[in-house]
Length: 173
Image (cartoon, rainbow, N blue to C red):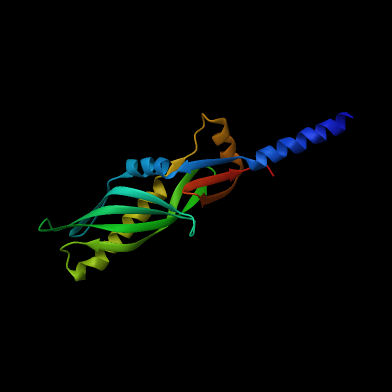
């Protein structure tokens, strides 16, 4: 009889644990990304600064998008502003309990008053700034002071985008 009760309790506990997930809203992610800004990259005669991020979660591609304002300065004499659309995958680092935007790609980019010959170089520098920064700085870090987040840290199963939220699913089995 004891074995039967233990088995029932174990199954119930297992089902509950498998069903647990954490959800992070766009606003929560927005706050974390905003704290990373501004991003600045200097190379040779050019400086690029990325500011004012707007985070968007895309359920169709399971990627996080960020629209940013850009300021470009070439030798202090040619100053331009514009915007860029960035998207990347969210990857979980189990050891650190952190989520990072990996493989960031700059899609649409428009810089006012910047000659066409500089556009590819600006895009390349912005891409480099993003890759290096996002590699080092997490978009989100699971907290040690939350039992649910502590458990997620150890048993993460899946990360996906659903209904405008980042959903982190975890379980023991």
